[in-house]
Length: 421
Image (cartoon, rainbow, N blue to C red; front, side, top):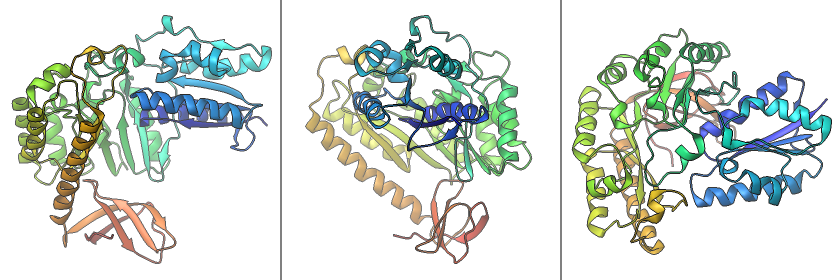
C-alpha cells in the first residue's frame, strides 16, 4: 500500500484544496502515514513576506524529514517561485494555484519515469473554477466548503490576485451537492470559504452569493451555515433578511475594514469609503442587534500618519466591532503599495498593533458580558477529558464551556452563558 502525508500553510482555502487531493489519494488506495510516506504534499502561502519565509522553511523541512519521499509543492508561494522551488530547494513536482486537479496524474507519472515536473504556470488556466471533488476537511462537527477562487479587487497591498488569478465561481449545483454530502456525513456546521466569497456568482451571470446562501439554508439537516468573510458591498438586503429570519445562518459577519481613514482606503484601492461602510454596518445591526461583527485591520500602511491611525481607531469604535484581526503592513514586491513613499517604521507599526489589540480585547470582553446570565444554544465541538468540559460555539461565535462528565460532541445544548478563564 502506498502512503502519503501533507501539510497546509495559510488560509482555510489552502487546507481545503490539499484535503481534497488527500481524499482522492485515499480513494486510490493510499494510506496517510506521517512517519514514512511515499508522497509528501505541501500547499504554500504567500500572503506576507513572513508567509513566504515559512513556505521555504517547510518545503526544506519536508525534504529533510522525508528524504525518500516524492515532494509535491503547490499553492500561492510556488505560483510565483516555481523555478526556485524546483531548482534551488529540490522539490520533485511543482505546481501553483492551478493544475491542482492534475496533481494525482503528476504523482503517478513521476513514479513511472522519476522525472521532475514543473507545471508551466505561465500558461495557467484561470478561466473557470478548478473542481477538486468532495473534500474531507473538517474540524469535528464543522466542515469547510470552498465555493470560489481568485479575486478581481487588486487592493494595492495584495499579491493574491496575481497568485490566484481572476475570480471564478464553482458551479451552483456542485456546491449544493457537496453541502448535502457533508450533512449526510453528519457535519452540523458548514463554513463557506474562498478567496473572495461574497463575489460568488458574478462570473456565472445567473446567480449571486445571497441566492446560493438561501438555497444552502434550505438543506434538510443543516444545523448551521457560517460565512468565513464577506465585503461590506456584497451584504445585500436579501442576505440581511436571511440572517434576520433564518435560524441556521450564523449570527456573525466577518467584514474586512482594513482602515478607517478615507485617505488610506483610497491608497489601498479599497472600493468603499467610511460613510458607505458605516451605513451598511448600521443597517445590519438594526436588523439583527445581537449579531457579532468582526473585522480585519492593516496598520502601518505606507504614509499612514498618526492622524489617519487615530481615525481608524475611532471609526472601529463607531462601527461597534466586537473583535479585530490586526496585521502590520507587509510590503510585497510587485504590488503598488511596495513602491509607495513613506514606508512606516516597524517600531511604529508594533505600537499601533498593540493599541488595537488592547481595543479588540476590550470590545470582545464587553460583547461577552452582554450575554452573561442569558440562555444560549451551543454546538459542542470538542470534549476536554482532563477538565470534564464540553466546548463549543454559539451562532455568534461565543466560546462556551460546559462542565459535564459526559462527552457530548455533536450535540446541541442550551445553557446559561458564563465565561471560564
